[in-house]
Amino acid sequence: MDAQRALLDELMGAARNLTEEERKGYKEIKWDDKEVCAPFMIRFCPHDLFVNTRSDLGPCPRIHDQKLKESFENSPRHDSYVPRFEAELVQFCEKLVADLDRKVRRGRERLDQEVEPPPPPPISAEKAEQLSVLEDKIKNLLEQVESLGEAGKVDEAEALMRKVDSLNVEKAILTQQPLNPATMLTQEKKMALCEICGSFLVANDAMERTQSHITGKQHIGYGLVRDFIAEFKAAKEKAREEERLAREKEAEERRKQKENENEGKNRRSISSERDCHRDRDRDYSRDRDRSRERNNRGNRDEGRGMDRRRNNDHRNGRDGGGRNRYYGRDRSRSRSPVRHGHRR
Image 1 (cartoon, one colour):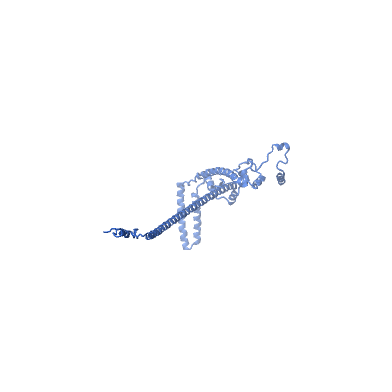
Image 2: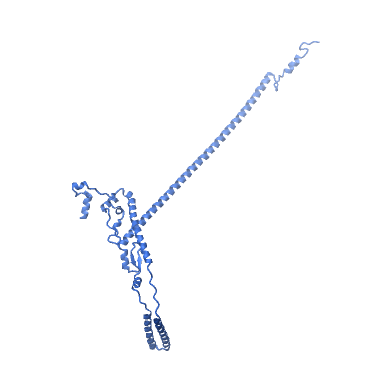
């Protein structure tokens, strides 16, 4: 019947049987509404763990609906809401565990304050004298038993041993002290404390009772709560560690990239400097070649000029010093008295 009702609710909605007037104030509940129990959506609701136990939290004030839980699990927003719901659940669980740990500490202090039973009081002088007499009789009888045994008188030795046994019984009665009932209860039922759920147990109790406690609703409930907290913290620690490693890896990649960029800049700088030196050397060689070529050209031009001057001098009748070869001849001729008409 419930399955059919749930199927109809899924097909036609939960408000299928409401009247038109009732539908006006009706609001359809969704899994992300505040009225829905978020811890129930992801794991468990602590209110459901301790029903009818000493740790009963009462009914949960919010909605527990399996259909809404299935809708949440199939929702595309499931992964984005899980951290939020887990944080709410772990906050509730940590409060429960904090209250329980305070209870455990108080119980441990109470167990530590239990006084050990006092030592038995000393026996009276009268009993001490009687014990001394009995011990002497027992000692003498034992010596006789030993002598009879060496002589081979076994029957007589056994008879004396029976007397020794009866004397030992009397001795035990004299040394026995009356026990306090509270002391007997403390010795018989030594208490212990369960660190998981804070329950008081009887130490060295029967296996059946211990197993019944371990499989009890309260012990299992607090075990689930503690396991969830430990799992949540471990997941958080793992996420932080992965985030730290990712940051370190990113920083290392940035460092390597920067080193590669600096190395590229250095290589480009060295290459540019090498090219600059090469250009300077090329310019220097070009200038040197041009200077040599100009010098050679100047020397050639000077040589050609000297040749032209030499040729011109030759054509003009000049000697190598640029003087006219015929200068002296003409002068000598012009100064000749005959040539110039000087007669005597």
